Image 1 (tube, rainbow, N blue to C red):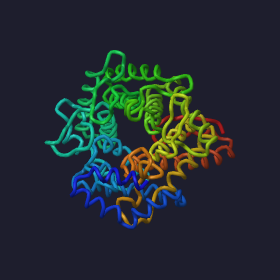
Image 2: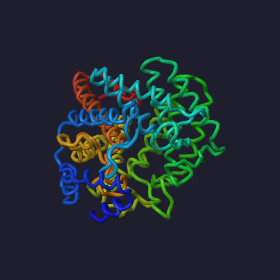
Image 3: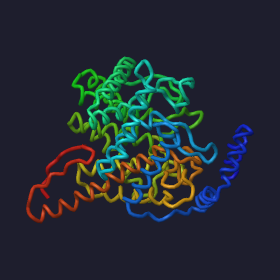
Length: 433
């Protein structure tokens, strides 16, 4: 661990080196380094307490940028990062969900400010840039995946406010995605954030196109989305693993993370919600079932897997864990299979146990690190905004599932037909308890 920090620190310029040294010696950060090295974890408290803490951390991360975008995260070595357009985009629906759950108008207003900021920095082509935003003079190359995630935010902002600007921005972005799509349904555009060219996780972008058509009723976006969905299904092996699903090439690190694996499942499940049928649900379910079996067998969710679902990883991708728990909760909503509910609660508890609720350091308090332990391979020594976002999503889904379970038990005692309305509008299915 110490040698890893030393190597990273040695590559920093002198001024940044001094700041990093002062930062790492903060007692709260030193405590995390030592405790993670010793394998110590905290105790999970109530899910609502952890949910509130994650949202508060995200609010602080938004305030730290001096604008309306959300900082990519807090690094032990670099401090607070600039705002990140991609993840700010998909934090917007999380904030609207939380505002609806709690009646917190400030959170709703923050979501609207995020959506406005995304319009301000949208590229002339309609696309969204890759990487963090360093001002209009910084490098601003368009990115497929990032564009899709901001579309999700704009669509939700339009649904909540009926402000036409958000739908117009989403359509401009959608038009760009349609225009640059390959004939086989994939997107093949080099960007600043991945060495690989084509990605199965872009199915989450296909979902964003479907969201536009849900609002605009255009039709062309659905055609492009279906084309990508078919390409994505063709990347799935019989064992549920997806090809073309990593950020880097074999020369560096070619294994898919649970983070990108979950992106694919999320895109398929949300597309299923909009389009209906069972093909996308079946594909996501095959992967989710394999992960469930691995988790039950190991009692631990490694951070990455090869094409045979083998791994040598001794760390967890904490963001991926939160996402997998959320996917299992969505599968539970479709199937009512309690194995998924129970495993999701267990995995959420593991993520909650890594979250420091009372740290003296605001970069840590309520945040979610990339890896457990913090020096693991995925975003080491950094608390990332998308980790907090996906934990919040998963905890809200968990709370809803438990509430519905109680309602179902009461309804079944009365012999009534219970309708389970999806918290994230994943499905509406009447089942007889």
